[in-house]
Length: 133
Image 1 (cartoon, one colour):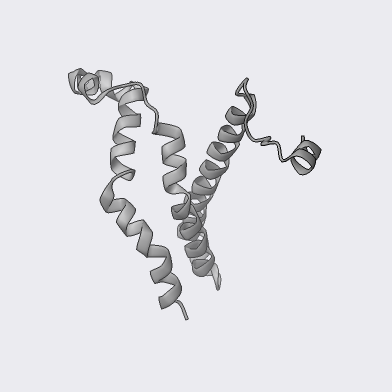
Image 2: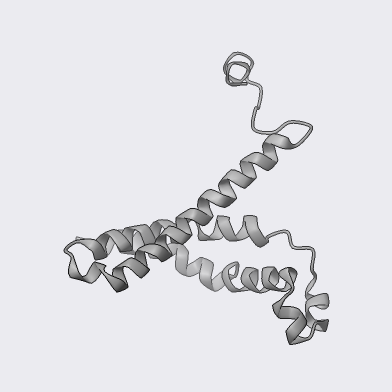
């Protein structure tokens, strides 16, 4: 495949069967999820043990910025194409909603994929690097 790409310029990321596109999407989904979970794990470590050591906070902040950078792509890949509509979600009772995957997908998407969070994320990384000595 790599040789076909180099010699003929053939796009090897997708093909008609869709296997490679699905595999690429899954790789990105799980890799971004691992980065986000790693940041959560770093903060848990910092709260439990890391304050006793020097230099841990700066490493945790950098890992957090990386996780925030991949938060939107990760959220979009996991919940961007939900089959549940807002109308169906509104008809669910609370007990049904809490155990329905589509309801969680809609609400997590609303929480993260909105203009306010996007605006904050857009300026957070550059602001940190300007303020950092």
